[in-house]
Image (cartoon, rainbow, N blue to C red; front, side, top):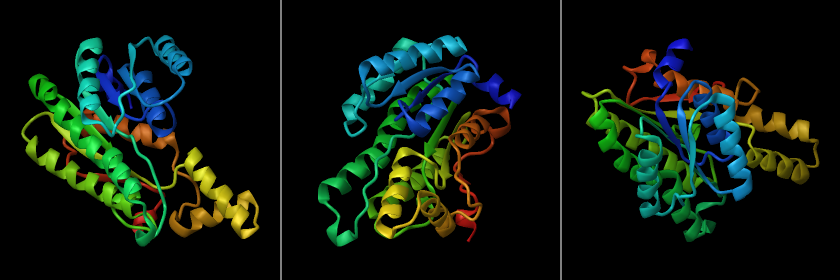
Length: 266
């Protein structure tokens, strides 16, 4: 991935939802390859300051932080302005922020539906809208939306999440078409099961409800969806982001890249 490193070195990356989990892994990978980073997300102020310092020292890059709430368009616009002011521009935008809630449609709370669409879908619209002018001016931009296999297929009881992720895939295609003649690409990555704290809780709940071990619950979860029978890793997703930012990926736009162990091949 040497070419990828050359492409991101000295660039400025904003990763939403990046104080933990997948977003932090993506930020870590791009910082490792020389990109300056704007972190975003919730968390303890002291912990976030330690995170900023650690990333900056380890990889010799600039690291800033915005506490912008991804459900609030004005805060999103201010975050983009802050990125450009503190780090000197915005070259790579990774829309990663997301939340989840599981229930049948007739039991799905209205406020949960609204929150999931706001954070998982509308926030990407607002970040892209705010970031595009700077990217067009520089004639360089890489917009990467972290969708999900649920942007391509559905599962029961995840109506809002599936709707939002399908929406992200459609938004990705539209942004790609509108900027196809520029050196600005827009793609979506569709991970399968990733071993995050959220997924671990699902495993623990399943083990408790079914009276089985954690290992059995894990294998049952994977076997239902992911033919590889192993989790997609955060490292896998970070490397896919890096690939899309590389010289090799410059003609890839408006597409979805499943990183799902065969889930969507069925």
